[in-house]
Length: 634
Image 1: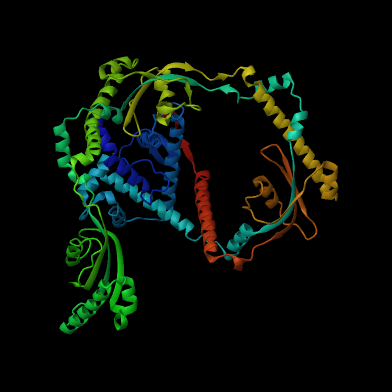
Image 2: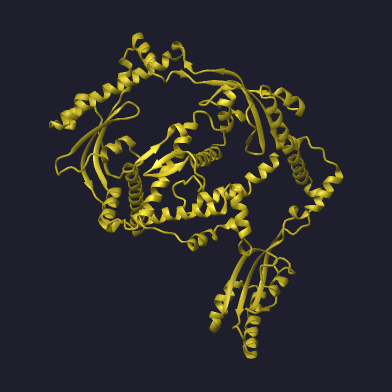
C-alpha cells in the first residue's frame, strides 16, 4: 500500500500539482475547482455565490499545500489559519473574475489549449499526448473540463493584471533621482555615548525585579514533551542484508554498464573546409593543402600555430578547434572511427568528410577500462544491499503503519513484531527540539499535534529525508509555566540595567542635541561631556567601516543648507546613543553612473510600481465589495 502511495506522490500527482502551481497564469493561488453541483452557500461575493462544496475543496487544497511545504501533520493551531487562507483565496478569485468580466476580457479555447500543449508533462517524444493529459489531470483530482476551466480563469486574471500594469512606467528623472540618492556621499561628524559606564552606577531593587518578572511573559518555561519512537531506515536495513556470492555475480553482470566508465578522448583538429558540392579540381587543391599542413604538424609544429602561420590565401577555409573530452559517436562517422582507433599523442592523416579534410590529434584518453566484480565489489555490494533493503523497507513501513494504528496507545506491539527498539527522547520543545532525529520539523510538529499530544495516540507514519520513517507517541507532557524567579533573577537584573542605562544615555544625548541646536559648538561639548567626535567624509550608504545605526541616522537627516549643519541622534541596539552632525551632501553625477546600473534601477522601480498598483487594485476590489461569509456553514 505505502509503496503505491510513494510511487504516486513522487510521480504523476506531484508533477501535476507542481505544474498547475507554476503555470505562468496561476498568479494568486486559485485554490478551487469548478463544480456543477449546487448546495449550501458558504460565501457571497457581490451576489455571486460560492458553495460549501467549493469551499471544502479549496480548504483541502490549502491544507495539502501546507502539509507538503511543512512536511508535518496539520496541528489544531494551524487549522484556523488554513481556513482563513482558503476563504481569502476564494473571495479574491471571485473578485478578480468579476473584474475581468466587467472589463470584457475573454480567453478563447484555442488560446487555452495552446498553453496547455506547452506543459512538458503532457508531452511525449512525438509532442502533445491527449492520453497523458487526461491521465495526469485525473490523477491530480481534476476532470479535464475542470482543469481547462481553471486554466482559462487563470489566464483571464493574467489578462486583467497585464492590462492594469501595462501602462505603468518609470520616468527618467525618477531613475536619475533614485540613482543619485544611492550614490550620494555625505560629510558628517558623530560621537557615541556609551551606556556601559552608566550600568555600573545603577542599582536594581528587589521590588523592581519582582515587578518586571510578574509583568513580562518572556520568562516562561516552554511547553515540553518527552517522546518514544520507532525508526525504520533504509541504511540500517541495508547493513543487515545477507548477500550470497552468486547474487553479487548476477547483479554485477546485469548492471555492469553502471560500473564502467565510458571512454573519452581529448581531441583537437585542423579542418580544411570544402564547399557543399566541390569539383574534382577543388578536392585535389584542398587535399594538397591538408597534406601540407599535416606534414608541418608531424614535424612538431603546434596545430594552432600551423593554422595561424600557414593558412595564407586559404585563411577563411582553414580552422583550428579543440573539443575537450568526447565520447564515441559525437564526431562525424568517418572522423569518429579514426579518432577512436588512435593512441594518445597520435596524429591522423587527413580524413575526408562532407565538411572537408580533418587532421586529428588525440591528446589524452580517459576511462574505457572494463569493470570487474573484484574491482567494484564494495560498490556493487552496497547497491545490491540497498536494492534488497528497499523492498524490505516498504513492506516494513506498511506493517509499522498498520500496527501502530491498530494499537494506538502503545509502540511495544509493533516493536516486538518488527524487531525494533523503542527509543526515548529527553524533554523537547518547539523552541528547543534537541538533537538528532527528534529535532526534525516533522517530528516536532507531530509530537505537539492534537492527535498525539491531547488524544494520546500514536502519530501517523512520518517519512523523513534519506529514506527514514518514524512513528512516535508522547510519554510525558509539561505545560508551559513561569520559570522560578531565582532561576532568572540575574537575567532580569541585567535586562533592567540595560534598559535604564539606555534611557539615561538617550536623555543625555537628547540634551546635547538641544545644546548643539542652540548654537553650542561640538568642541565645547566635547570638553564638557568628554565626547570623542569622529569625522567622516565621502561616505556612502553602504560604507562598511561605520556602524549601521550611525549611517542610518546620518542619511535620514535631510540635506543641510550651506553653513547650517543638521543634527540628529538615535539609540543603538547596544544601549549606546549616537549624535550625528551632517555638514554636506554631494549628489552623484548621473553621467558617472553606468548605464547598466541605471537600467537595473529602472527595472527595480518598475517592479515596485507594478506590484504596488496590483496590490492597490486588489485592495480596492475588497474595499468596495459586498462580501458575506457564512461562518456557521464553514
